[in-house]
Image (cartoon, rainbow, N blue to C red):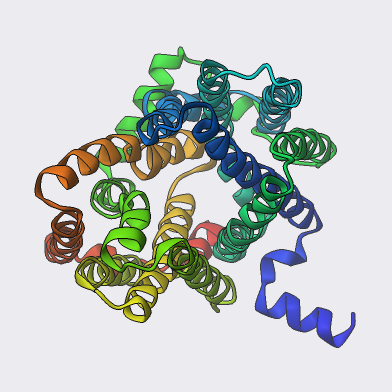
Length: 421
């Protein structure tokens, strides 16, 4: 093994698994296609409707399956072959993207088409996410789960910068449909890669054979009786409700508050991506891997403080710095929380519990955006965001005081204990 390779594996130990490397490649391809389609789809809606409200509706429609079906997707992930589930959902999503590509290329596309396929793509995403996250812990050593989760965050945030930029070039060149074509091909390639991965699945003796409702109850009961796990699953609801609507308001800050126009919008959104990428790479290289409960609470506290600073800032450099902190520590919060949940939960229940995490971290965002937008019109977006930052910080302090065991959690220690068992 060459010295550079040895250094890479020392810094990012999850890459020692050949299966994980191929799984990470498939995730990178899927992320590229998804962000390209998201970018061109938003532009397409504006071309078709010239309505910001209808643009918001398209985003809300895409999030509805996660809000209502996330917990059932977790049950499904624990009952079926997870590899097969990912193949089917990615192939279905490829079909949806292909249809939109054909409709856009031929000039037949209408707004209702976008709504239908946004909902269907959201449904495919909802069904595959618990299985995709649960697979990670089955293809890497338990002591490197944190590294694997953080590397996935790194690729996600790097491509969140690159893919929309490429899609913007397509749009500028007059090839709006090309983004849909790229996503269709990408998803088909992802399905082919995953179909050939030797992903282990639960032995028949370990599979839950009860009714789906009983499965769901088992997952909910397991979380409810463990106070620490319950708090870990519930904590992502805090940024979902009080923080993440800052993304909706960034164009307003660029145009009306910071007075920087489209160039400022690019700088602000770029700052988020750069911060997130730095945070993800730092976490991926953390030794021992996985982080701790102290990192979870500390990261969320910094996110709350940085959001309050961004809310009241009238300086572009300060606003960019605040957003970079939000991006970086937001990644640390989500990646570490995800890792701790995975090492705390047995394999047979992991899909169900991760689906609850998915519900709190993603499913509540459409509701928060709608409420935040309404409040922003009534009392001002600065007040809404500043109050969200203060509420986030207050909840972190209350969590630390009410359950100090959260701060004492260490993913590496939990992994070693389970391995010893």
